[in-house]
Image (cartoon, rainbow, N blue to C red; front, side, top):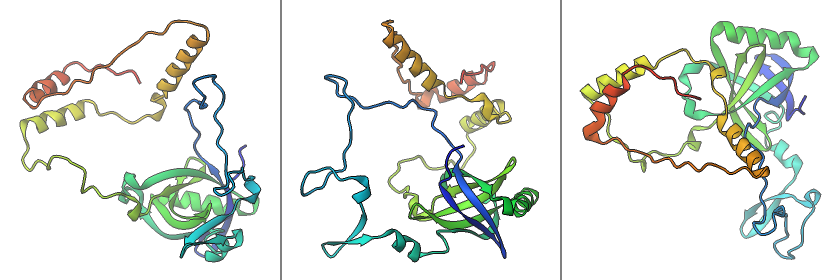
Length: 259
């Protein structure tokens, strides 16, 4: 079992549920090291003093905020004093329907594990969330950063899903995109038919990280001296004049793409 990354309690009305937070995700990509192209030696990063050029041990490193040309050093205690409650409590502020939260705000999921003394209250909160169809909205502090999050049931556990604050989403003003169609064109009608034809119930188990496995095969082949086959994909753009023909052709017999 991995180590917990945060310990504290869920505050649910006057009920406090002691919990531990664990990361709910793990990387599926390959762990690639950076090497010197000349002799394949590992590249290492060092924490170096800007004045002396000497490496600084991690234990001697502190955090600081530059103000009026000087640094104000922030101690561990200062982070907690800033908001002692939020450093130890996941306080549910309200409940909302999850569909009201746009997916662009979602950031990182975590599993919550209850302390033995809080198992009953944990179960009640999990089951009441499931029965209501709603999620709890909360803010708390983790790793010296305030986080906005939701609490939702997922199988037997409560998942804390960190979401971004509104100010963290960049403006779309500089993004060039065509205006929305006010009238239903023939192309739009055809595109809707294609969407309907390709609609199915979502099953996450049908999707795998095949790129990583293919890359690993190339690595193994290179290790044994097996020559690699070079492939080059040319991106073809559909012209406006060809759009209708391309949509009609797409509505032919469906072929399942390999995932």
